[in-house]
Every structure is written in structure tokens, then in C-alpha cells.
Length: 134
Image 1 (cartoon, helix red, strand yellow):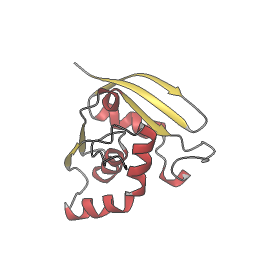
Image 2 (cartoon, rainbow, N blue to C red):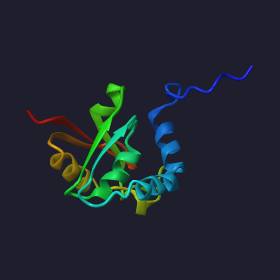
Image 3 (cartoon, helix red, strand yellow):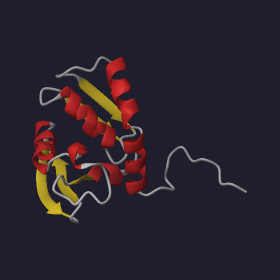
């Protein structure tokens, strides 16, 4: 008997959820167009998961805008991890769709987060550990 679909995706790893979000990337552009999102807008991403859509939204609203990412999983909110543009591109998005670490750091700082540490996890991945400024 086939296992029922679990909408909360708790049966998947973050990498699997991120890959799923990437496969739906074309839909995100339509969502943003339908919402008429412009630079400077404020957006709430409910169920942000590993953050792919949040990053696309942040790019659309730019440095004057703000994206709030909410998820019920503490794991989704404690670490910002991304594919490094200088990685070999053997997995994950193509190089042109990868977000440079400096951009993610700037977004975090602009959103009121203090950067605690940066680490290159693998040749493909990097991560920032951040916390909300008091």
C-alpha cells in the first residue's frame, strides 16, 4: 500500500525540500508578478522551509524591501545555507542561480540579524549562522 502524501514534507530531508522548491521556480515568478511585488515591498513567506522562495523574494524586493520567513521548524530558521557560486555545480542549482555569500550576509544584516559565523560546508555549500539583533 502506498504511503499517503504528507503535505508537511516532514518525511523529506532539507535538501529534498530545497530541490522540490527549485523545481517549482517558474511558479515563483508568476506568484511575484500576480502580487505585483516591486523593489521596497515587504513580504511574509509562511512555511519557508530551507528558504529557496525566500531568497527569490528577497532578490525581487531588493535591499529596500524586507522578507519575513516563518516556519514551524526551528531547523529551518536557525541556519542560512546556500549553494556557493564557485562550487563545482555537480548538485543543486546552476551557477547563475546561486546566491553569493556576501549577498546573503547583506540581506541578513539588512533584516536585523547579527552574523555569528560563516563556514564553507562542502565545495558546493556554505552557511551563515545568524541571530536576531536585540
